[in-house]
Image 1: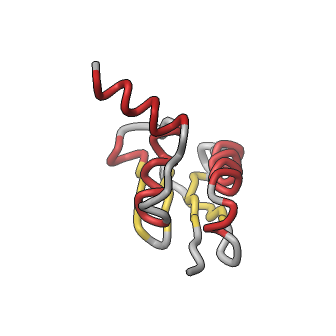
Image 2 (image 1 turned 120 degrees about the vertical axis):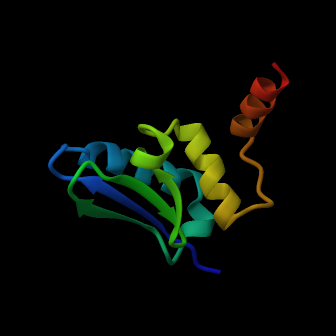
Length: 100
């Protein structure tokens, strides 16, 4: 199955570099899952910063309160496009935090 990531960012706020970095991180982590679908950047306005995995909103700056921690974002994306997949260090870090 082909999957895709879409990062919508505010051009007025100059968040393109942040959006490109997020897309790069997703492409690096989910290489196999994103083959044929890829990651796209979509310019927007009004302070928007949203990340979609297969058209499912996984992060919204307005709803989730700021910008995502990249590890948390990878887990949210994984849960949509590859729920059975382990993220290695990202999962171990989350498990340690939950144990505290």
